[in-house]
Amino acid sequence: KREKPKTKIEPAPTGEAQQIRAERPAEAPKKPKQEESDIKGVEGEKVSISENHPVEDLNLDPERFQYKVEGLEETGATGSLKGVKKFSKELAGVVLAWKDPADGKTYVVNGHNRVNLAKKTGTDAIDIRFVEADTAQEARAIGALTNIAEGKGTALDAAKYFRDTQTTKEDLESQGVKITDKVANDGISLSNLGDKLFDLVAQGKLSKEKGVILGSKITS
Image (cartoon, rainbow, N blue to C red):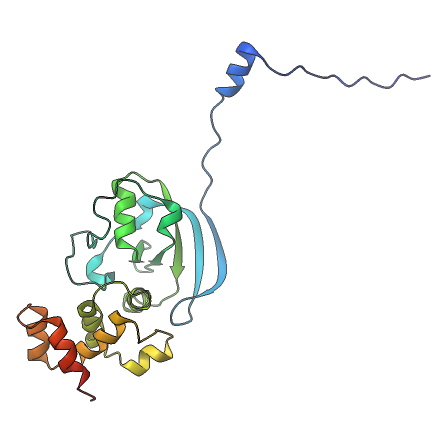
C-alpha cells in the first residue's frame, strides 16, 4: 500500500525568527481607487470617487474656485480650521475636485480649508470626488452651491456669488438648495441690493443685518 504523504507542520516562529518576520517591510500603500458613483451633485451631475488620492496632486486656485470672499488666505483657506494640528480622514469627509482639461491638473472646488490642513500636516492621501464640468466656471458653481446648501460661508459670500452669476431664488429652489437656511436666505436678500448699498455692506459701512432687512423688501 502507498503511504499518504505526511503533511509537514512548521512550528510557530519564536524568538529571533519571530522578530525577523515582524521586521519585514510593510506592504506598499494602496493606489488611489477610483470608481463611478451614482451620487449626484447639487445640480444633478455625476461624480466619480477617488479614494486615497495623493494630496500633492491637489492644486489650490482660490481666485478661480473659492466662492468665499471674506477672510481669505493666499491658499483660499478662511481660517475655519485654524489651530487644528491633526488631519482626520473620518471627520474631513470628501473634498470636491475638478480636473482641468486645459492643463490636466486637479483643482479643489470645495474643501480649501481641509486640503490646506492636509498639506500642512503632511497627510499623504485623502478621499475626493471629481465633479463633471466643462469649464472652470461650471466647476466653481458646483462648489459654491454645495457650500451654500451646507450653510457654509457667509451671507455676503453667497450674495456676491448670486450677483456674479445672476442666480435667483427660483434657481436655487430648482437646484435643490434649501432657501430657508440662513446663508442662502440672507444671501438672496443682500443680492437684491443696488450696487451702492451692496458696496456699503461689503465695505462694512452698512451692517449685514440692515442690508438683509432692506434687501428682503425688494422683490424685483
